[in-house]
Image 1 (spheres, one colour):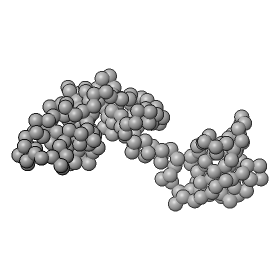
Image 2 (cartoon, one colour):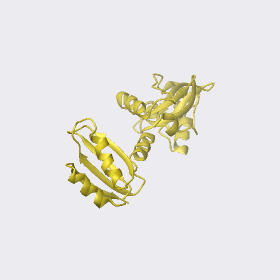
Image 3 (cartoon, helix red, strand yellow):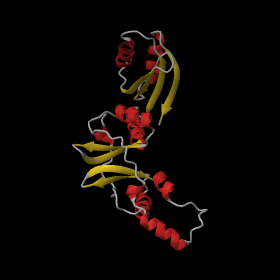
Image 4 (cartoon, one colour):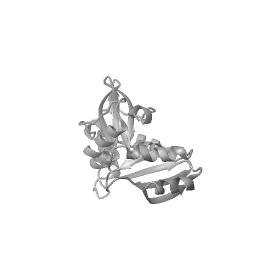
Length: 211
């Protein structure tokens, strides 16, 4: 799963000389939390709602409405945008994107190819990819199996499932405890599969149906 498969390409961008008021209106109109800032198609910064708040006078300001409007009309995007950017290639994996976001505490990464901004990938895109990876949009049975750490354990388990003619929608191995394999099966003949898994010495720690 690659960044290019989940990034947004229908971008709303802004420029360095756009006023803060105009940038804020762009975000509100398009329900966006951030805007890439471009110059001749190249990314030069990014501005977020939080950045706008930092440069906008608070409600407790003593400025009159006219003074406030004057101040805001003079502030432009380059006065508030972040210039230290974390970007990613469209060919990068989703794991790389997630790690880069997590490590640097950012909610989105501009996607750059040969110096040109071609997309943006956000936390929401990563969540969508996770749902797709885990097969959560398909009906079936979810099994969590306590799996011993030995070579061939997963292959043995999948052979048992295959022998019962049941399709595996998705599987994921989690190491946060001793080792848990989460399987999503297509829902056909699952009672027989569960029985066969347990008869072969595996412990099913959780079972749920997913409609």
